[in-house]
Image 1: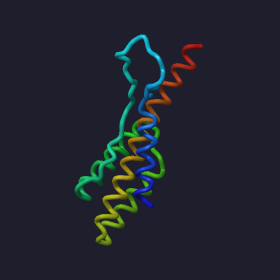
Image 2: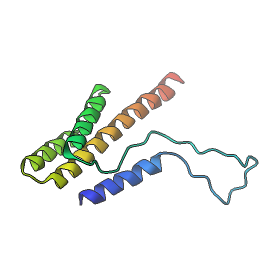
Image 3: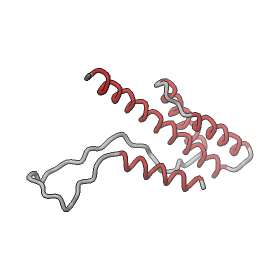
Image 4: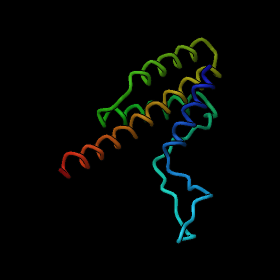
Length: 123
C-alpha cells in the first residue's frame, strides 16, 4: 500500500513537472524546450537514519514556509515507532513518504505564493 502511494505521488510530481510536447503538432521551431518545475526525489533511502534526517529537514522547510502538511508529521511519528519496533524496512518507507509529503508541501507553498502575486498584484 505504501509503495502504491509513493508511486502515485511520483506520477503526480512528474505530471506537474512540465509539459510534454505533442509529437504530432507542427512546430516552426524544431528546438522547442519543455518547461520543468521543481522535483522530488522518490528513490528509497539506504538507511533509516538517512531517511529520518531528510524527512525532518524537509518538514522543517515546509513549516518555515507556513505550509506543512499534517500527513508528514504523522508519517514521521509512525516511522519512529516502526524503527523502535525493529522494522527498519517499514521505518525507511514511512520516513521517505514523510519527506516526500514535506517536499511537496514546500513546492505547493512556493507555487501558492507565486500564484497569489500573479493574480492579486497584477490586477
